[in-house]
Length: 282
Image (cartoon, rainbow, N blue to C red; front, side, top):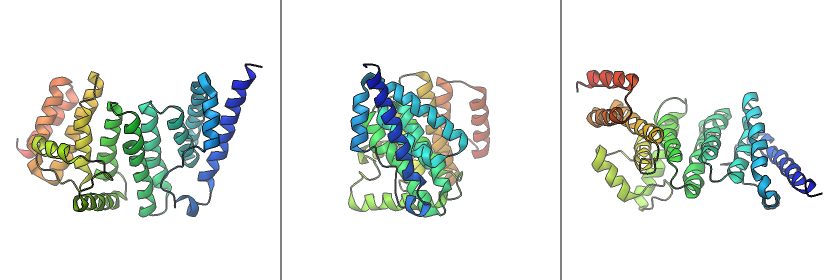
């Protein structure tokens, strides 16, 4: 009987997950009106609370199901499962990165227009900035994920709606500048001034400035050489992309690459430094 009760909780949880997947199986005209996947219901929270030590087992079951959905390209259901993973394993940074990536990269591109795509990209960012960092404020992996989201999804042209995303972000930052309330874009004016002093005056209305911001401050949380290497790469990547827009950023981009080279030497980075130096006459 003791073994039956935890098993029953697992069954109930998986049943709740299956029911929750309905949310993103609705007609797209309904689903796209939402900004993000809703959190588990109070009833489901009670089920999860009852899992006790079997919570990890339930998470493994959800991961297994998520992998299957990923392989099948069923991103709508995967978004719901990803929200459950953040509920089951809130202090695992990989879960937050996985969930936000799915919203911003996979679900967004299934939407029929730029406005709907932006809602899902924004939802992916919000998941990291609002909840992921709140629950894991010192996890360098989250800083890296945020920096890459700003540089690759918003700052680069890897998505054909990227220019629209940049315009939306610009309006959000301009609103923060006008009101003096930076909470919506999660930027700290004192830290922004420090970034300006370290890397040159930034155009804070551009996503690349936010990429640099999160990569730089994430370095304070990095505890391993690999974590530092990822964030140093995010720093020089953002500066290199800024240099494409304004060559005045090139010297600082080169310095950032050289700093990364000293910590983690590689032939690839050496070649990158050489090519970048030649391009900008440095």
